[in-house]
Length: 420
Image (tube, rainbow, N blue to C red):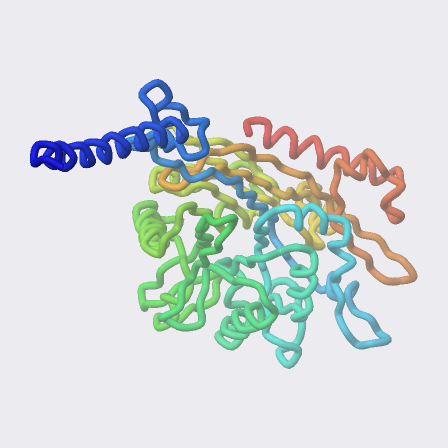
């Protein structure tokens, strides 16, 4: 073979190899579907998905939370007489709440005002004016669906300093939260509950009057100076002082991560069916401070419920007084038919992370206290008024004469909550 032929042979085979490699590449691309005509074919199993340089942020889903509240738990001596079982020597209040239990449990959190003390049997059980109730009232309330008890009220010192501390201890031991008071300084007077992933703070304030010698006057009883920090109070004679007290707690709760603020207020004039000037001004200030729901008590009668708005147009329900949830006050005992009326306030908020809560609904379920004597014993029942009017046969102790008072209770609540 000549030198020219050898040279051609050396050049030929590399060209063949390159040619085969190029053909193989295009053949493979055709088989895989990566040619120029179908390079954007996302249906192909090996095709890459659409490329988005800056995907839109995923918003946190909003959730609804429902808070319920009832008025004063005012345990007169006839109520614990009714709860007493002579065969066991125990006090069982469960029957008194049996008919409203479904309404109280049908909320994420339910609050009630404990307008009595739990000083123990050794202190002697008592009704008005210095209340002391068997501890089992807490068991009955918990069984009925109550989660939080408010305790910053004018009966907090009814059984003195021992009663103050024992009430807190007993409620906690029985598994409920107690707010408005605390047993020692490092504790909080409020609680923050996680409801459907939302942190909700529950605050409670009761009225008290500063004394020149120090300490506070609470319903004519003395709260020593060294204990004034253990109860959250407002001063009805000084609006600005009261606003500052509430503002401090709101700020503290928000620092603890609270996204929703619920305030329970013990205020107003007893047996007055309209809120006074102090209540209305303080409520407006609280809304401006960021409170999302206000529940009130103490007058022992119902007062109106209204919607206030903050500077940004957000709606805040204010129930000035929820009345008596249970007591022996009624037309026959105090000559005031309005004292036997109450309501279960129920508020639903829609909450989204980073946004202000939005009011979804605010409603009131009217309740009426039934009192009867059966086999020479008192019987008390909290009756859901609307249900009783629709199905009287569900409530064996009610009679047709009761219907008029129950209907009046329902109509009263409808009138007072017409603005919700």
